[in-house]
Length: 398
Image (cartoon, rainbow, N blue to C red):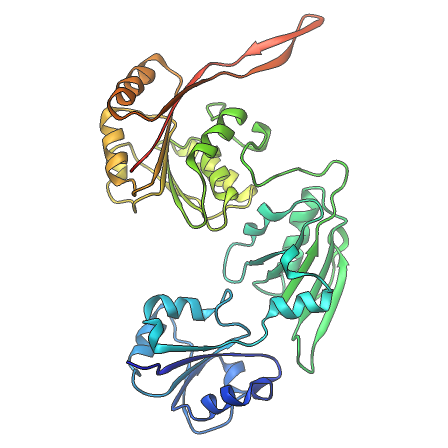
């Protein structure tokens, strides 16, 4: 089937901003789908369809008109945090033609004089605003698609709480239109009332006491709520490195406790996902709070005992077993793990180590003993206080 569906990016300047070829596509449409604001920019006799509710029914609506000349109107670039990508996952790309327009990120970068190669582009539109916390770092420039008029104030609060109150913030609204507006300020004193539909530019400026939260694993233990039974900083860094976080990859954190490994995994790669399996409600609460505070609010938590709780979970790209190791748990994990998946098991007790060593003998992989000593006061002098050793087994499914 040839392309019958056209997804057209449109800006604040409406149809006048379209190329002649794209304008001809819109004017020849039999069906136009979009929001009220977009429909108001377009004249003609085509059948008009508003965004459906619930939005998940959009694909069925579009498919019901297959064979007609259908146009979907989207803001800016339809494939950059927009509806075009969603449609392209459900309808054969050979049936779609995309017509991109200059998007909010390009316009905002131009207004700010920033190089797009040297900044981070984020969206919190319709998503938890806390997602941006993971990107707060010294001298980092951020362009953020917001959820509404209240979002810049929320982000100003996140910045100020973490010692980045001097960060400069600029809200840009209606870019490219006759009502374009700009609001400038500083995070710690932000007090602007801004339009609901806006893009936020942030230049992160750190105070001397700012929280340092790198994306690489190994955050300080003090940043996590918990009851003390967590994978400690240095061991956690080694564990996440072996798990190899990758864009969009899914981790099972088996016996996740306060969620430190899952949180670090999600912070380490864009769109990395994690499911934490933890039978204790208090520890799941710790994990949820840690995920929110450290910028990965989409951590999914499952109440259950392994291996039973693993039965209906989507197949993972990596698995960390920090507690509850048994032959049954390993077999359930190993069979579910995707090809080239990474499995890391940490054992502290003699009983868990005995199981681990038998599995290592059967399956191979890498075995390491990790022990960390920290300087501590011994009376009036200092000495090394060793932590409990951790036996770490890691392997890749091939």
